Length: 369
Ligand SMILES: Cc1cc2nc3c(=O)[nH]c(=O)nc-3n(C[C@H](O)[C@H](O)[C@H](O)COP(=O)(O)O)c2cc1C
Image (cartoon, rainbow, N blue to C red):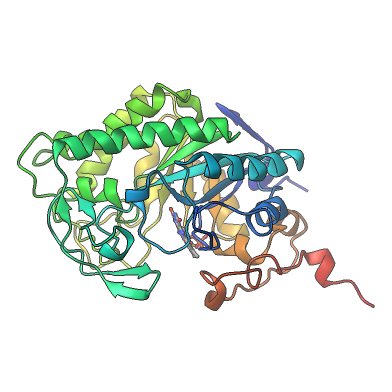
């Protein structure tokens, strides 16, 4: 029988045992004042999933300022670096590879996280979304437009976080330039009304991203850097597409050919975009011809569609999100075509072990007593 495409090892800049990637997923389990991952929860959670070709961690804020959701871990303090080291060691001891996702939410935050100060964003435009604060879901506010000094400080925060990630033993970093967060807010014309060198033209709206990438490249080899994009995101996280949205992503992705990154990580549309004239409906098929490096694709894939997109030549790696929550042994299940377990949305972001560490492997769930 022919080997499944998802199970064929991959070796270009990063050497992976298979092409099944665990997508980054916020789980809000860092319930401690230091916002660090814990030995009780994060270490066993990532260990259970170490058979993935690559794990990408939950979004991890690059500074205190970068946060927007309760109980998410950071990668800016010494305590956080030490705590993440335990996670990376456990994943490596179990044969896995792990990147950390570097996150700044921008305006998708709330003054409750910042001692009453406003969250930062390219422009003072409220996304009219919700922020998950320590006091429950709250409406977002009109953020503060970043000064040039604040932009420069944020570039330096990303660089520092990337340096920390290497100290903590990560195999690489993924820049979270997706899903309506800070970079996406700069890219998008409806959230970026700046009139300086960070707004207006496509080149200006993408300048901040490339400045961060170039800064990270000084401390992490570019072969260990990935970047995530969601080009056809519309109507979620405060983002509305316009006629320049897809050309902006085309510009970014073509320009990334000048780099030698670990990968670009794209999402197929999160919602039905067939009625949106500016949207591209098949992201991998559209962007594959524009990019010469490794292309990772995500969103709504299963065993069959994941194998197919690689066989069709439209992606090299496939990231699975929710399936990895409920199937820690997803690779084993795909290999043997075992039945898949359902995830429980109610425990996605709740504290503690429930819905986090208690999903059994296929073998464990089929032990007869
Ligand atoms: C609980 C949960 C948390 C998520 N957190 C993040 C995150 O921190 N960073 C990110 O880039 N995407 C995040 N996502 C999006 C996933 O990475 C992925 O794009 C989405 O789940 C669709 O893929 P799937 O259909 O395979 O689940 C999250 C998704 C879920 C379900």
